[in-house]
Image (cartoon, rainbow, N blue to C red):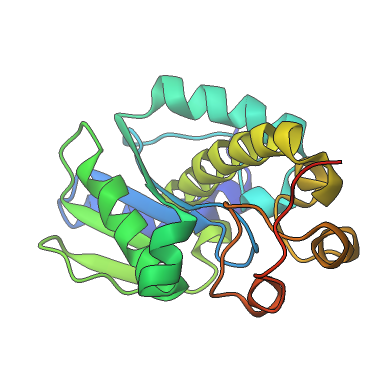
Length: 212
C-alpha cells in the first residue's frame, strides 16, 4: 500500500511521466558546509513507479537507514552517477562553483539515458530540461535517492579521514565546524585536506597538524 507522503514524494516524477519523460535524474549534493574534504554530488535515475517506504532527505535518516536505502537504490536504480570535487578545487573555484562542477560530473557519470533533471535548489546550465526544487530532497523521490547516495559516499570518506586524523572527530561531525573540530584546529592545526578558503581554516593555515 502506498502512503500519502510517498505519493507526494513522487508528484514531480509522476507529472513528468505524464508529459512523456521516462528517464528522470534526481540530483543532490553533500558537503558544502564542512571545513575539510570534498563536496560530493549524486545523480540517480529511478525506474518508473519506484517506491521505497521511508525514503526522504538523507539528513533526516539514521546512518543505519541511509546505508540500507543506499544498497537498495544502487541495486534498483537505472543509473547512478557520483561527482567529487576535492578541497583544492573548492579553494580554487569557491564552494558554489565546485558544487555545480560535482553535479555536472555526477550527470556525466550516469550510465543511463536522462531526459529530465530534478535538482535540489541549484540551477545548472546543461542540455537537458531541468527543474530546481527548494528542499527537493524531501519533495522528490529521485532527489531523495540522490541525497542518500551522496551522503553515504561522503560519510565513508570522512570515516577514512578520521582514521588518519582522529583529533578532529570527523567520523562523528563529518567535517562540519563543531566545537570539537574547531578546538582541534586551534590546538593541533590543519591537515592538507582542510579547505583554506574557509575562514576557521584560513585563520590557522600556518599551523599544520603533525599527529599526536
